[in-house]
Length: 192
Image (tube, rainbow, N blue to C red):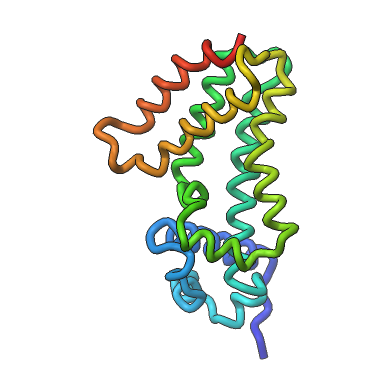
């Protein structure tokens, strides 16, 4: 007979699975992250894992969406209608720091990431794609800030800065300081 978990146990187990999966995804990638290893590290049986997730892909996709939601939450909590360029700069720095903790979501051209995305239903892929392309745009529109340059160009410049996270370990200087310097200097060229 399968063990019944209390609600607190369920929450703790799920958090442990997610934490272990994020660590594994960052260190060895999607393909090499096994359900067996996640179960072992989380102190649960494989059967218990499937009480929480129908597949490994469901777990990875939930993590991907949760990271995106967390980034959006940072944006929402940092900006309002009266936000200044300096507020936007601070928000982008916070988002970059959170993003760099979960850099596996930036590796979209990695064969490992592509393999995962090939197993995710189209409607879920569309959600990830929409969030990635529009969350920042939507939050900026809620402010009184105006682009000096074409909006898509400005967002693309910011996107390029975020792509630095892929090479953060190869940089000859601290990537956080480099990002901060670049955003502080570019913000006046992008926004009025």
